[in-house]
Amino acid sequence: MGIRYLHTMVRVKDLEKSMAFYRLLGLKEVRRYDNEGGRFTLVFMAPPGQEECPVELTYNWDGDTGLPSDSRHFGHLAYEVDDIYATCANLQKNGVLINRPPRDGRMAFVRSPDNVSVELLQRGAAKAPAEPWASMASTGSW
Image (cartoon, rainbow, N blue to C red; front, side, top):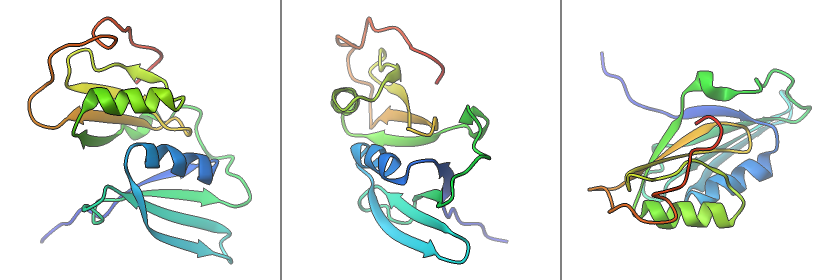
């Protein structure tokens, strides 16, 4: 029996705010489904050229009291980036807290507006340690 990856789903409280976060990571909307009867919207966002690997943002129009306060039970989303330092600097400039800075030039963790942990990994070899990242402490959980 074959198996094929489809997507990862996360429930979001504020669709526009969450989409803005994933756009900062470089993802784009590849598909949307609005369901009047079920009163929900599904937005699929993926890296350019990898439309077959989306994250599905599920937004319930009438609110969602079922969202946990900490989504760590989910694990994390992971994305490879061309420049870990530039990616983290852009996220930080746009108000995203870098929970686990890329001190090693290889890996960082951030959180989405819905508390979803996102791992960022440097494509290829790790970059040489550089400031301000090398001496930056971790903040919160990641």
